[in-house]
Length: 93
View (cartoon, rainbow, N blue to C red):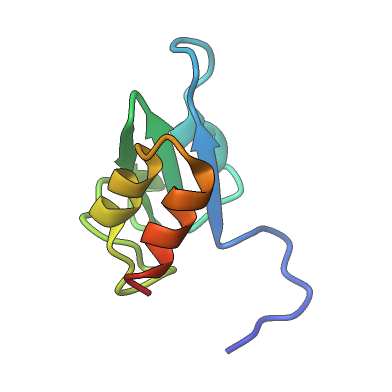
């Protein structure tokens, strides 16, 4: 179901190149964004917003892209040649 005139996205992808600074989870919770993908040190975290607590909780899979094999996505990200990474990723779609 497509929602029109949304104020915030359903999913944010954050690539954390450095540590420290503001808490990304606390920052996004103020909006609240339903799901974050945080890429840090070649690992993918998928915290999801819990409206009961107003915080993000770790989740094993994406609610926004159900069925997406996140481990496969991480494996493909480690392939050096971009064209090969895309080809490999698409082979499982």
